[in-house]
Length: 87
Image (tube, rainbow, N blue to C red; front, top):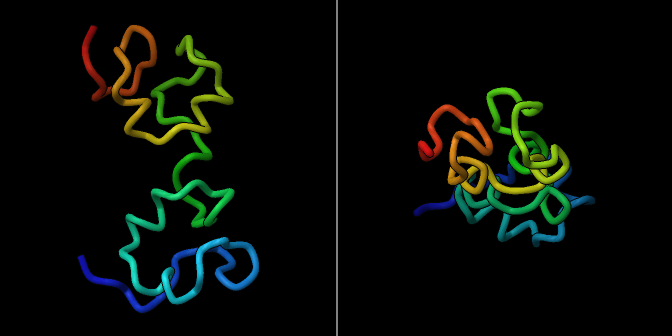
């Protein structure tokens, strides 16, 4: 893994808890994996990855809070994501 020499945060100087030097040293996918409350990159954690969030039995607020990998790990019958485990 190599760094990018830039931050992918929406406001790296004022709204990130991650030191600027670290933001610039890590790959984008590492920054994106952090919760937006800690390091807001405008991606991940703030949207549902369900094909139709209303069809999921998982509350939408939880769908928006968990990483995409958690949503996709659920059976399609519980939380349809087109690509999650088949139940």
